[in-house]
Amino acid sequence: MFAELSYPLLALAGLIAAAVILGAGLRMTDLADKIADRTGFGEAMVGGVLLGAATSFSGTIVSLTAALDGRASLAFSNGIGGIAAQTAFLAVADLLYRRANLEHAAAELANVFQCGLLMLMLAVPLAAYVSPEVSVLGVHPASALLVAVYAVGVVATARLREHPMWRPVDTDETRDDEPEDDDDPNKPATGLVIQFLVLMLLLGAAGWGISRVGASVTDRIGLSASLVGALMTAVVTSLPELVTTIAAVRRGALQLAVGGIIGGNTFDVLFLMFADVGYRDGSVYHAIGTGDLFWLATAMLMTGVLMLGLLYREKQGPGGIGRESVTLLAIYGGAILLQARAG
Image (cartoon, rainbow, N blue to C red):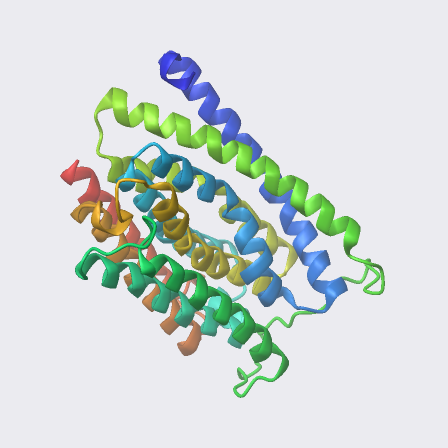
């Protein structure tokens, strides 16, 4: 169906899908904040797991659909390129939060731990790429390892929040995770969760539409799948993270903002598992090219910078933005220029 659309209609379909993603993402931020308050799980935990997974749902559909079509590079670069884009969004949020460096104000050990988890998970597809090509029922063992690492990481994050062995130093700019005054924490969260799940389904439908548009652009214009995946489908399906992060910062839910990005990035690595399952011509990790590995290296580099920023906790950088945020934007901008030149 999408292959027969004219360029204007193709662009319109992409804009409609993007609008759905933006609208759903904005509402999900409010719901996630209230769910965090009512369940007692906290903003960092809910942002890192629930909100992160939900806002990544559209991207999951893109990678799975691309893999089922045999487009390994598009499936891989969509997930990994989204990690780089979303980390850059956190730097944009730091620009908007003028009181202090966002990584300083949103001090939360769970977010630092999630960064370490993300680095570990990003190393798995790299190890799979350089290892001999093996598969079980068409799926590389690395995909099962990604799921196991993610599951253990979620459990460990929850335990870390309940029994932290390290605590950040409180300053006058540290913003604690406190329930909203206008919400009753004793109310059940069932209705909020149902609304949240409905919005997830909308994001999934929008993600499917984006995948169809991206595939058509790749075929018609002749752009590389890595370029389309990392800079078009990944950015569009990452719009929920941008919306939810900015909305969370505006609400003062800083741990939710940072946790949503890092948690979303962690879940994005699981795109590769879905892509490997959907790709039926062998291991997806051995069907990618150097352009896809370029975005994997970029994501690892940006995650390392973010983790160091969360640990160093610069209180106020030049111009009100942390030096790690400046570095993140420089890395992402440089990566875009290099990818664009490579075609």
